[in-house]
Amino acid sequence: MIRRLVPVAALILLAACQYQARGPLRYGPWEEDLTLAYEDPSVPEPQRTQQRLQVRVERAAFPSEGDGTVRLDYSSIQGSLTLVLRHHDGGIALLGADGKPLARLLPEGFPRTQTWEDHGTAYRVVGRGTWDGARILPATSSPVGVWVEAQPAHGPLRRTLYLPGLGEVESLELRDGAWIAVNRLVGRGFTNLPISRRP
Image 1 (cartoon, rainbow, N blue to C red):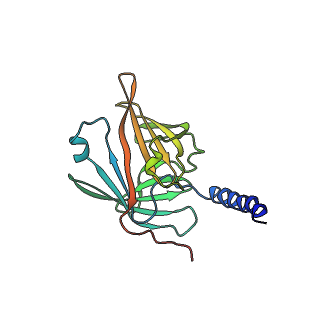
Image 2 (cartoon, helix red, strand yellow):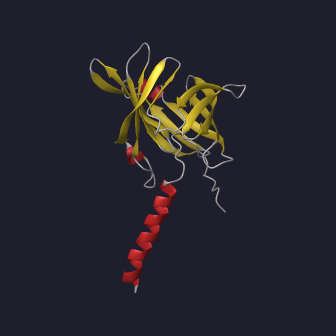
Image 3 (cartoon, helix red, strand yellow):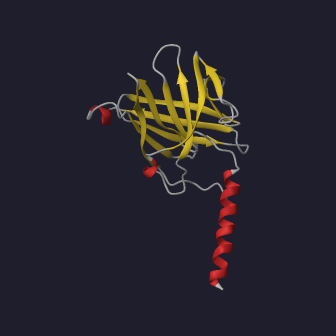
């Protein structure tokens, strides 16, 4: 009897996973109290640790399924900064004090939208990729994300890997013909226990 139930249970779990995968993906941190730590691997120690950046989701509000705002606290030994981001149809915009968009981090329709431009920088979706640093993520997190290339009017070519629920996990710069990691997610956790939004 148990042997017959195992395949049925597996099919139910697979169906549930497929259903969740069809929901809106947010390519940025949005769970309240989620705290991420970043380092620049191209910088030697102890400077690398001293320059570590911490990003914490201070507040998130999603009145509709995919649209809402996220308040992020950035902190390092140099100081702190709070930013508000608006999520809409896969896109992420940085909001000013007046609530109006200052910059478009990701376009609406991302990652279906393949190219866009913002403040003189041209962006394009390079393709999907699996992050090799995913060992710091929980087993429930997918290591597969989307690589985006940024070509500024002045400065090096840059590629960033975005994962659902996290946003940027690694950024590379083209230096002397080689891709060098300049920003990498090195820590993930919750400063407080996550609060379930489901009854």
